[in-house]
Structures are given as structure tokens and as C-alpha cells.
Image 1 (cartoon, rainbow, N blue to C red):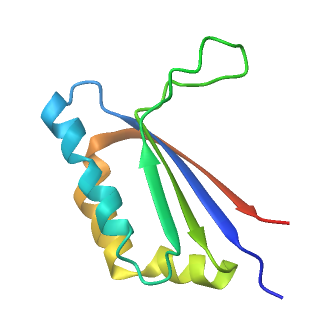
Image 2 (image 1 turned 60 degrees about the horizontal axis):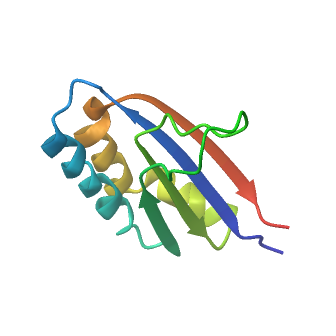
Length: 104
């Protein structure tokens, strides 16, 4: 039985980027959303949720992609839209953290 997979990624962009370059980074997510196995892709900036010790709002952008299965996620990882987007936009970031979760 396949389980839905959530692919959560945090991006810290280069602090030397201009406001326009940071805005243009949205194109990265728009390209990833085109991969056919992506069920849903959402992205955004840190929410102003306050300065609690457990909250890390130091990232620039975050995204969550939903897949119907681990297999669909694996197809996404190798898909030309995904690899091309990384080639085009990886110069923008200084750090990336990925958390993948199978929904139970």
C-alpha cells in the first residue's frame, strides 16, 4: 500500500542577493510544480510567529511538495524539470535542509 509523502525543504538564500533576485527565486518553485508526479506544491516566506525557542524562522523560503507515493517522489527527484531547476537556481542558496515524511 502506497503512503502519501510530504517533501519539505528549507532554503537559506545568499544574503548578498538583491530584493529582485529573491523575488525571482519563486521561479524555482514554479518549475518544480510542473513535474507531473507532484500532487501539490506550496511555498512561502517565514511566518511572523514569534520568538519562541522552538521556532526557527531564519530560512528565506520554505516549500512542501505532496506526492501520492515514495515512487512518485523518486521520479520527481530525477525528473528533468527538477534537475534543470536546481542547475538554474542553486547559485541563489547557501544552505538547504530537506525533511521527507510518509503520512501515517
